[in-house]
Length: 330
Image (cartoon, rainbow, N blue to C red; front, side, top):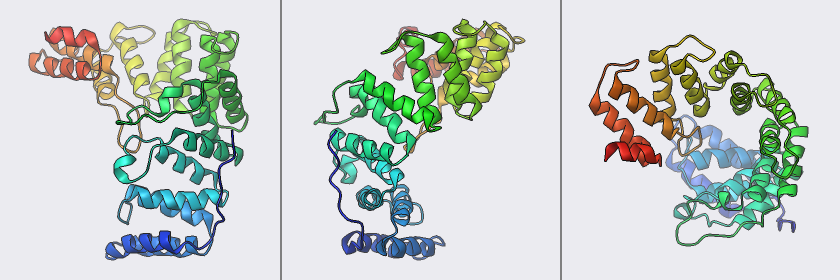
C-alpha cells in the first residue's frame, strides 16, 4: 500500500484557532482550562496533546463537539507519529455519520492511515486493517449515496495483520485469528489452535475471546465438551458482550451445565436484547434474545404472562432483522 502523504507537525493556526473558539464558547466549563492547555501544547508541537484534544473535540467533552476539527487534530497527531491518532482519523473516515459532520468518507485513505497506525505499534490499527482485507464491504456499510471503495480482499494479508497484532499483545488479533482457524478461512481448519487463541485472548482480559472460548466448550470444538465451564466464561464475558449474555441465558433456560433458572435467563435475554451500543461504541443488541424473551412473556416462562410485552419484544426482534419474530407478529 502506498505510503500516506505526510505533512510536518508544527504550529497550525487555522486548526488551533478553530479549537480555541470552541473552548472559548465553553469557558464556564470547569474542564475548559485543561482543553486550553492541550491546545497550547498541540500548537507548540506536542503530537500527543493534539491526539488527546482531538478526542475531547470529537466527543464534545468540555468543548464544542466538532468532528471536522477533531479530524484536523488527529492528522497532526498522526503526522507526529502517534499511532492512535492515525487510528482515530481512519475511524472518522469510514464512519457513515462523518459526512454530516464535514468529514468525507474514504476507505482507501482510511486503509493507508490504519497501515501507518499498525506500523507505529497500534495493534488495533492492524486488526481494523485486517478486517478491511477480510471483509471489504464491512468498512463502508451505512454510507449514503456514494459508496467508497476499500482495498481488494486479501485473506493472506488479513491473516498476517491479525497475527502481527496478536504477537504484539493485541488480543483482538488473537481472537480474530482464532475465528479463522475455527472456520478454515485462509488456513487449514484447526479447532484446537482456535481454542488456544481464544484462551490467550480471554486470559488477557479480552472478553470477546472468553465468549468464543465458551462457545467452543459448548460445541466441544478443540476442547472437551464442558457446558459448566462455558457458563463461567459466558458470565465473565457478559459484563460487556451481549452475545455472551445471550449464550448464558440459553444454558440457564435449558439447565445445560447449570441449574435451570428461567427468571435469571429472562433477565439476561433482556440485557442482550437491549445491548449497550451507542454512537461511541459498545455491544450490539442480539435480535434472537428479544425473540426468546417475547416467547417467555407469551408462555409465562420465568416471568408473568404479559402479551403486551411479548408483542413489544417480538417487534424489536423483527426490527433488528430476526424474521421469525416478524411472522409471530403477523
